Image 1 (spheres, helix red, strand yellow):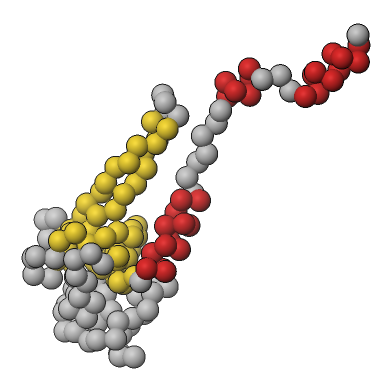
Image 2 (cartoon, helix red, strand yellow):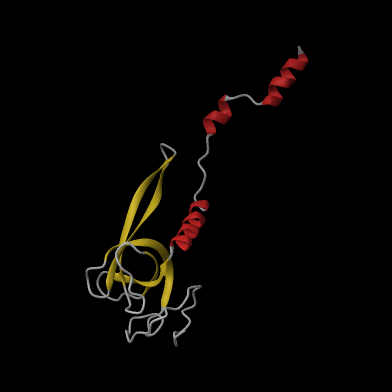
Length: 149
């Protein structure tokens, strides 16, 4: 392992070293706030990647969810070097430019990404089926009515 500093999150430090000032492991950049897991959809710009992830937005009227996508630009330090198609973990940091407010802190393998997705899906609220519960009489009421006759 290299002389990477602890960034305060439960992630493995990268094997490579870099001299990037905006690297959370080898520079002076501090991470804070929100973290997201997403897929790199573009890595064409220098030290920048576009990360996209899918989220579910509830529609109250229909008691269903719709799929929406979020896209952000994130700083890609040379020691991490995420490429197109990688599942990555990004964390919020101070603004690095007009559009970059996140930094890539780990490239996830397939197993790690699946575990995180399963954990996030457990947090979604369950939809309530009020009408079905009100319309269908319960078993207790039926048995009591039969006993009285």
